[in-house]
Image (cartoon, rainbow, N blue to C red):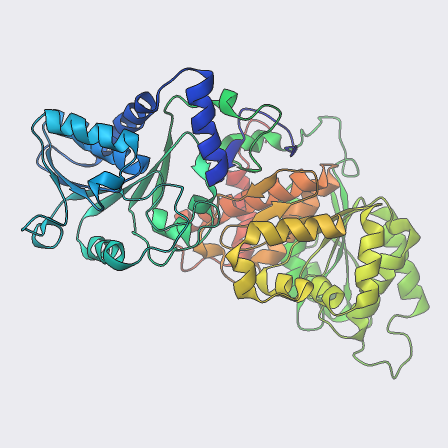
Length: 533
């Protein structure tokens, strides 16, 4: 059984297709609620969303498939027609192949004297007529094959229409588990999903096809989860900001977390600055930055709150050890001092950077520490078998958090990015279990996994975050939360979520084109304006 960071009503479950089907079946069995009752409830919620979007003069097309998703669409169209809307129904398939519940909805429409159009009609209502709203009820979460032939033609026609498209549960053609496009898919402006969000609505490219997502209830509750089991994935909402650690009124700078940053290299001071400032903005009490001497002036100017310990850096071993003995001793003292270490942002991959990571992983006082390994630290580990072995050994003693983006994750796993994107949940989970770490796989929808924990799918953020330096900001946020003493997995999940909110806040203040990484720590003042703050 997967365990959540802190179970509570704020957290949102995210379901796979199999989990959703099981909930449907258990609701029918446990509560003696017929499939038609569930269908009518779903149809009513779907119709209500259409009513909020269009006025009575709107021309509506219901595009229905042969399964229960099609039945939801047919029933929603009937409810809208009864409310006075101009509704046209189109069945994409053979009536004889429809599910029992879908056939029942067809019989109900027939009893009202309403016509369901099919490809057998002489007039092609799809190409010759225009509609204001199209309800996509072709396929639900159970799609397991690529859309092709006539169905692919229908998808193409819908995508070319100048209509507002509302998807029923999930856009047709999107895999509910991975967000993958199954051959082709309908692009929706709005997706009305039932009971809980589906994985494919948060993962890309599915999230792009879904448009806005509105999750509505239809009578399926947590009582319908299989006994002793809960869904494997979840996400956070703004209510989960209450998970931030409480700031005790009698606390001091030491009690709010001491962080050591191994960050920056010659001509790369920005990574250390972004990371260090984020540590402070998320609430950390003290930050030390271990960085090359060339960065001293700029960091003292930009981040005077931080304590700097600098070293001379070289790129080759011609001078012997990369670090002088006093510099190595200072680094080990800093490791002993810290509650949390963030290593990697902007350190490069030269011999000096390699020695920094070696000292860190081999230091006895590293045991028991929270540690965020990011950026170049991950690239160094990916290319060094000895480091990989040390990582496995330290995982049992430390709270290790790895934060690769997809290219770095590719180097760590040896798998191509295109392969990883096929099922990012699977590969993130496998790596986290193999190395016994918390893995934060950064993508448009970031995934966080740890052995024995439910999997976190992030629902915050936007493309404003796709700019240099934002990963350094994230590692600082996660490090700051871990330094408080938060569980490493929850620090990672909450850090990712807050980082996304910061991107949204910065974009709302200006625009999504112009956001720079350095702005994110500053907008945290508004993002974290909660009762805890």
